[in-house]
Image 1 (cartoon, rainbow, N blue to C red):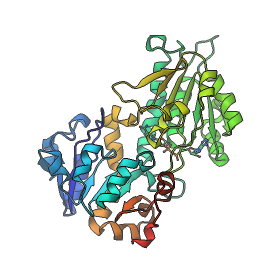
Image 2: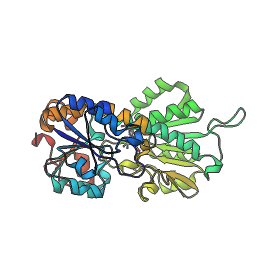
Image 3: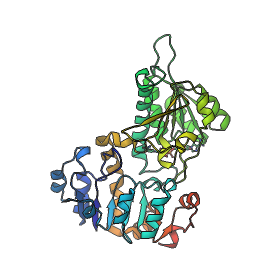
Image 4: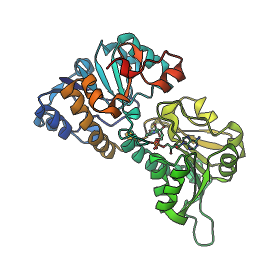
Length: 371
Ligand SMILES: NC(=O)c1ccc[n+]([C@@H]2O[C@H](COP(=O)([O-])OP(=O)(O)OC[C@H]3O[C@@H](n4cnc5c(N)ncnc54)[C@H](O)[C@@H]3O)[C@@H](O)[C@H]2O)c1
């Protein structure tokens, strides 16, 4: 199969889908890999390393997209839609519930869209996990950073000092990103409250963190009580493939102290606060805005800030499935690997993932009908 690795073009997106090691595995399996010149530079991989691994360096996005399978990190942007062609496989994060124009472009061109974020085994999302591990950690670092007075925040040190209270950090959603955020916040000495709707998950978190954290069942009353007392809120809620639930209202924000910080990690699924939903996602160039005296951080590609870590972590997770798709073709790969079939959001002009179809008002066609 001919596989293309384009350079990412989203604002400050420094990751690349394939490391040279991934290219080497694909080439050894008999595939051709075209890597756009400079695609790996920001992740510290040179064109020479890709060539040594057996990849072909191509000079333009058009050549990288001229492939049977396009291996990416972020969702295609509008200027990339023109490269779509029938039956081309696009293997990347898609977050379609938050993006009707991309969904339409993919349906019209009859590409096959395999979304990393909906590949699912039980409760686990193995291709979202590595980036949620990164995003949760960075969210905690950014949150405490913006709490400094010099950054416009309330002027609190996360741990406090002996005799002075620490920051109260509230984490909504105790999944992968939430747990990663808790790990950092508890390690830095914050007082941490975590809310989730899955009691079993809250139990697991107590087993991991013991008395370092408080847990609350996520309902409107507990959310309001926790959020209004917090100086830092990190929202990491997710219902796979669906638009994020909007849990923090504008009224909640008004109840928070001046200079508090909200990091909406769930912004890539549309956002989980009234305010972030109604404002475009922010970028690494300009990551925050202030509303009702509260700093909102809503960058949709947080892991792009730490590409040396993120690229390796993502490529480690995605390459195994990619090899199966390239070796067997997408249909046979989906027939033999059930979790991969859940990743197919669009195929042959149909929406094949129910939550995306429901959120965007498209007809839903089960993937089983196409396999
Ligand atoms: N902004 C970024 O750059 C970036 C990067 C990586 C991941 N993400 C996003 O982070 C989010 C979390 O990803 P994850 O891998 O941790 O998912 P996950 O499935 O591991 O965790 C989500 C958690 O949210 C909980 N939840 C669902 N509804 C809830 C509610 N009403 N109240 C409280 N908790 C609720 C679930 O029970 C689950 O424990 C996703 O939206 C993902 O796309 C964003």
